[in-house]
Amino acid sequence: MTPVIIFAVMALVLAFSAIKIVPQGRQYTAERFGRYTRTLKPGISFLMPFVDRIGRRLSMMETVLDVPRQDVITKDNAVVSVDAVVFIQIIDASKAAYEVENLRLAIQNLCMTNIRTVVGAMDLDEVLSQRDSINARLLGVVDAATEAWGTKVMRIEIKDLSPPQDIIQSMARQMKAERERRAQILEAEGDKAAAVLRAEGAKQSAILQAEGRREAAFRDAEAREREAEAEAKATEMVSQAIAKGDVNAIRYFLGLKYVEAFGQLATSPQQRTVIIPSDLSGLAGLVEGLRALNAQGEGIGFGAAPRTAVPPTRP
Image: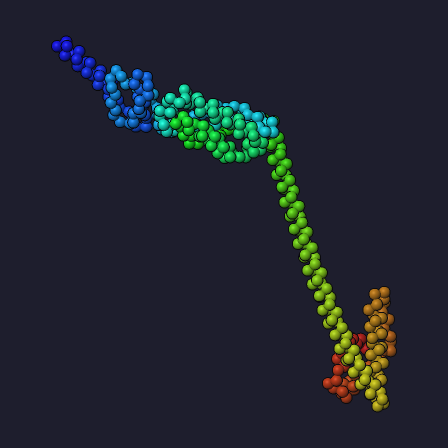
């Protein structure tokens, strides 16, 4: 029984050393007497016992590497603290295993040196405002360098950019001054627009007032013209009546002038006391003359003469 047990144990040992199962997402390198021979894919693989062995076990999935924080001097001599993250994936297991001693450390150092190179060639304002450009430049350089290591750099992202505290305070003051300048510009533009609108309104108002004055002057002139025509007709009629020897026309003419003079005396701004003459027979003659003239020339324009209130006669 003892030889059988020993044989069974040896068979199990040989089976375990010859049969290898590779999980999904990983690849193993096979070595024969210390020399790389082939790469074992996910699944079951067979090795020659006591001759072949597993060399490196590599993950073929995308991996995240943290790039340590470091201080970088920009082109304008400002110091910023920068850290980043790198996403890598092994494409060729044999190169990743045998072309570089420590793949993760090599990629980290490569990223740090290129961050110093890229950021150091830019001004502080460009560094703070052009992260996408920095990421793209780093990705191109690092990916080209890691191609020989069988590794693909998927993405590089700048995680944090921290300028010194005094620069942050200066930037805050600059931003405040810029906002105040923009506010003043907007306020000045508003005042300008308001002044233009006020000037436009004053212009339109002056135009409308001038047009109103012109229209009023035109209408006043027309009214004076009509009044003069009516006065001329009345004077002509009175003259014709006088020429015919009509006493009523003479009474009308004299009474009209009398009433006009009396009205001017009563409406004078410096006249506080109005003296009414005791003899108002002239007014009665005026009324009698108007009545006679109206009876003779009914329908002819006496209406243009100004209407004057006749004071009542004393009893």
